[in-house]
Amino acid sequence: MTGPAGLTARRSALLRTAGRLGWGVADQGVSSAKNFVLGVFVATTLGAQSLGALGLVLVTYAIVLQAARGLATDPLMVRYTGTEPRTWRSSSAAATAMATVVGVVAGAVCLAGGAVLTRWVSGEGGAAFTALAPCLPVLALQDSYRYAFFAAGRGGAACATDMVWAVSLVLLLPLGAPLGLDGIAWAVVAFGAGAGLSALFAAWQARTLPDPRRVVWWWREHRDLGSRFLGENMTLGVGQQVTVLVVAAVAGLGALGAVRGAEMLIGPVASLLMGISQVAVPEAVRARARGRTALERLCRALSGGLAAVALLWGVLVFVVLPYGLGDRLLGEVWQDAHALLPAVVVGATAGCLHVGPSAGLRALGRADLTLRMQALVTTMYAVLGTAGAAYAGAGGMVWGTAAASCLGAVVWWTALDRAARAALPLPPATALVPAEELDGRVA
Image 1 (cartoon, rainbow, N blue to C red):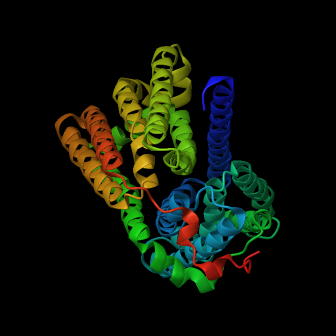
Image 2: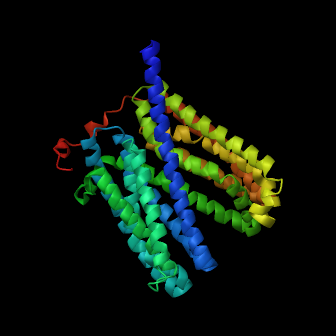
Image 3: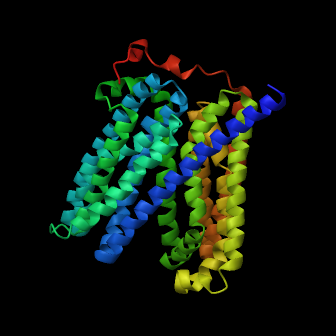
């Protein structure tokens, strides 16, 4: 289509894409604010030990979500983005059930871990993990609804779902003290209960419920993607944690604190990146349907736009904060953090360049390549970061990880280029749903 009509159509498509990306950023903002409120509540009312226990809880929660996404919602976004409503509800019923099963299994493991912590390590940590165990199925379910909405292009519904959780959490947290439930266990239970209310609201919006009868079918049909996405997600999540532990052992907690201070200064970039990443794969799937050129154009726009914002924000922080603001924000950590900021900005900017090709490869169904690329990049990150820390402390660490991010960008884009050249047309998503699942039984 050419001429004014074609230009109008392209502008309309661009505005729709920008709107969906905007909802992803807004949803991430609500989610980050919710976690911040929880952390402030625990820090101010329960103290440092409880805050440390909460940190372990949130890390565990994040790992469980990565597992549930790999097996459930990542395949959903690749194969059911943009499908007609009945097909979307049918596939969402199966995917949300799969995510819930992951939460149930993780909850059982968490319960056993809580018992061990209570007996041998820390009563506070044990109480937190014991409280987390029954919450994990609901937490995984709530997250799966969010990603199902993104697959359907309903970012507003995902954001509303998280808003219900945030409001519920704010209302529930103060109720513990009058009831005599003011420890870390209550904070975790309030976190899970808010997620439960949010999941109920999401189910009402989606007009569908998890269908446990279809979990085996979902695994059988999507294990080619699910098993690889699971490996990729766990490699990324666990790999980052291992790197932090190794660097702390090599360079010391003081050096790691300076690195954390520098990373806090570019926190808005991290929130933006996570928000865009939530909707990057569905948008790449939509672009794939229009051909290779459209897919590559979108991937370049995603990576280039994020990298530009990261670089501009980093330069602004580096130039402005030395005029008194840095000391107020970070106190004694500021001087060391400011010295590390250039390397952290370079690493964050290069990391933004990974978003486009990663989404593009997922949209092409190349879970085999994304797993290999993530394993390679995570290995480079760990090796170069640790080597840098051993050679030059915190400065060596951040420049080592920045170099790994830069090399990783080259690796990701090379993989996307080769995969796009070799890509064969993929079947329409509706063809992947058995005929008996389209008879309207899932309302």
